[in-house]
Image 1: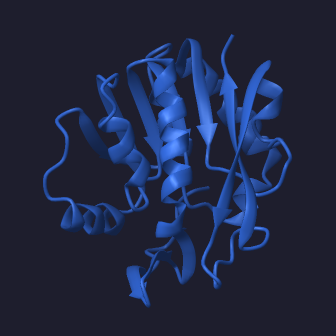
Image 2: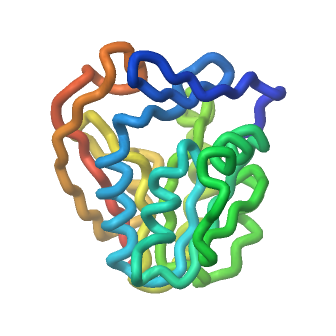
Length: 205
């Protein structure tokens, strides 16, 4: 599951590079900004009320909330420290942005049906969670249930040109956009540090 035993969370800034570290692992880095903004802009094409899983550095949260089309944007974050770091950098938040605390794999069952136009999904998860087929089989129908007709689910970008199996069985319509990226030399969570990244948008039809 998403829960961990109080990992160390810190914002590491060195030689112009910014990294959010959770439990000693790279959770997010500032070079992702353009890809996060592109994902946020795509999400906002599909409605007015949005939900985001994983606050990270808040790049996408602020972009979504700042879009003129957005009426409401709720972000679910597991760790208090991540929100505290974000608020220290951004003490004044948009009125339409709400940050909640909780574990997505529990909270998703509580989301009202057909209540959101889009979900942006970028939590820090362990590899065993990503590989848990039964977990995703339980979870994704709940995501679809929470989406309004025509609503979308956009996970964080991929640096491999393949559709993510966790989401693929639950949607018939998929939009993919390719964007160039340049990561830090020490980035560990991409396939290479430069090339093409793929934003995948799964639409409820």
